[in-house]
Amino acid sequence: MHELTIATSLVELACDHAARNGGGRVARVDIRLGVLCGIARSLYFCWGPASRGTLCQGANLHIEEVPLTVKCAHCDAVKTPRALHNFRCPDCGRPTPKVVTGREMQLAAIELADHRERLLA
Amino acid sequence: MCAVCGCGAEEVRIEGALAPVPAHPAAGHHHHHHLSHDAPPQPTRPIHFPGTDGGDRLVRIEQDILSKNQAFAEENRARLAGHGILALNLMSSPGAGKTTLLVKTIEALKGEAPIMVVEGDQESSNDAERIRATGAPAVQINTGRGCHLDAHMVGQAMTSLPLADRALLFIENIGNLVCPSGFDLGEGRKVVILSVTEGDDKPVKYPDMFAAADLLLVSKLDLLPHVDFDVAACVERARSVNPGLEVLTLSARSGEGMLAWLDWIRDAR
Image 1 (tube, each protein chain N blue to C red):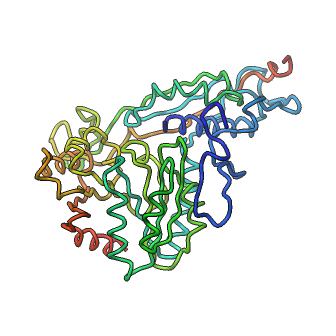
Image 2: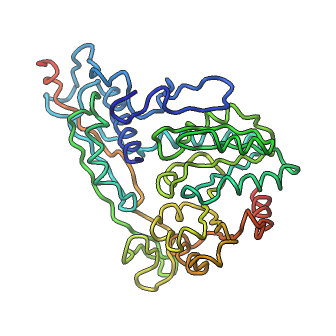
């Protein structure tokens, strides 16, 4: 269920920015999702219903998935764990609770549709 | 009611509030534009974008999708800090014993500090009534189909509570080991409660919850002889996703372990 909350938050945020930038239709929404969010598939599923009747209706949702990396304090380096939720350094085996990337949930950009489209409409 | 997500003015209810609370405030918390459900908003006039030749235009944004929730959470946190109130966000699956633990905790601490409770459930005010029976003020939030509390709901509920200085605020989240972990409510600490009847592998099955928590309470310890729950294995798994996680074991029913939990709260204040 909370994918729908996130989808509707995303629609609202994208519509706010579209309104601030001329109020035109949104053609594409680019977001960045960390793999730990684990909601990419269901977000695609929710996108249509959540955007219906808004400036984002019909917009393509483009998701860039951000891989998991952690900071190993012992090796003093950024590492990629062997598996999601296995927060251990793949080289020295020590716990690596500090997540560097993988939890992102960001609206990166929107692409506004051609304004002439609205003149013709 | 909205056909898209089932939300509606009647959907989120805050019972015990001093004044009716709109589920969809003008401040724009809720996540889509209701006015636009039936008809898309019409631009009042065509707008020319200087520097474009009619092609599509990219607007860079770089903003967290849940930034509105975060803003409400920071507002709640500032209000709580202004009163020196410690707020604990209690999360677990349904039936882990959150409300029973809360009732026992309030009974033990009510002589030491003013205590207030925000109760979250999809439906019913049963839990708020159980809390009020202890004498503590409680506000019930019913989320309807919502699977978690968000910071705006909690902020609205807080306006109905007597925010006394140095008070304790317990926020009992919706019973759910998944969604509540992603929403900051403005609390001081997050506490996840896992009962021994649920299985010791839950921390690796629902890692986000255990990664987000500050404290794990392993509850219903009185039932341990009757179930195959390995406390040490559970703690090891929980710490594999959150090495800094504090852990306490207790039974609200027998009272075992309660003193350490009460001391943890006292220290957190």
